Image (cartoon, rainbow, N blue to C red; front, top):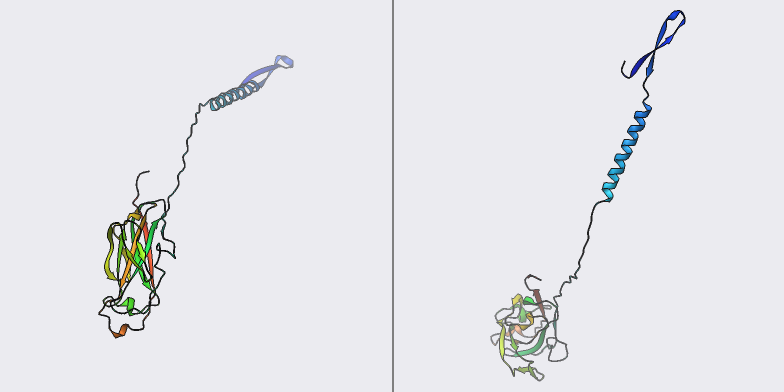
Length: 221
């Protein structure tokens, strides 16, 4: 039998009784436990002996701003809030306004959208209604009036060629205010065509000018 020996015990008459004797497993069990404990101890030493090194760096990242604004009202920096009455065919009205890039980003473009509310033939008739031209002076316009007129002591350039006063996303040219912190000195001229007939009498429109700046293209920073 595996793990057993036969032991004989003397009996009366000279006979012997055989008894199985089990080997002690205690020593083997203790030895196994000791071996396992040693292995666990070695594994633990391997975990705590790992080498490490850490280094770090940081920087600040901030986004820019797109902000365009008009000059202060009540002065030649913004006369777009000043209306006109008793227009007759052939009349013109001039209004100056500063267009300012107050954001930290350069712009890819600036567009103009004009709307009218209330509306009338003065703005809705593209032929005999009001016509608009926008010019730029390299320095601030010299103002006279009212009624307001403007002359440029520097150089002038065209920002928007003559067209009907109402338009959507009109592209503006020759603007320095595409650059952050720059200002353009603009003059808006509206002309009431001489071909307007009697149907244009006693009408009123309120025109709103909305300038929209679009950020420059993405670049490496």
